[in-house]
Image (cartoon, rainbow, N blue to C red; front, side, top):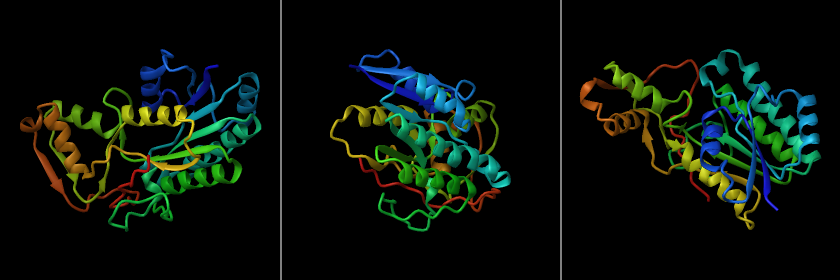
Length: 263
């Protein structure tokens, strides 16, 4: 029998990538993709009704509030989705015997370590976005036994969504000057590679439940990443790329958030 998989937040860059790669059902996986408009994870009654009417083996939660700057200004929105919404989802998964695959973030760490963070390291988020994501993780661990929490970093799609990669390409084509920080170090991660890892987690029958770190495993600064993107699109010579220090943002961000992969 095919495994039945619910994907929440399906209109985001990761949800769209999973749909593009796997909706053809060549691996014995039957997907149901739902956007926020069809299934909002903060609406507990709607979740209960949906899970009651449908039978799933796995739920891949791609629903998240990811605006780091706005989360600092209006944290209640971030907590409502990243924490309370995740709690709702975890409770539904427990009630209906569904294994939850939840996408979390490198921002649960403070960036003080200066070497890759392992799953054994104690999180210490320094902004409201990271705190809301960590609380979501805590709810999952408190409620469920059958879960995979996958932390990733600097997630981007070349085709979908609003992300750093697509922004750099767009500005590069317009010939705009780009001032990019070199102070923050992380690992850009393509949604294609994360999608493949998620599916591998589902297919691998011997995979142990718990927390995993997954990235593309190439650490760099935002400046390095911007340069790489511009070179890929042959735009580097058409704009002025400026390396800056102490780039000011409203939210504090970890200076070093490289994750040690434990596939």
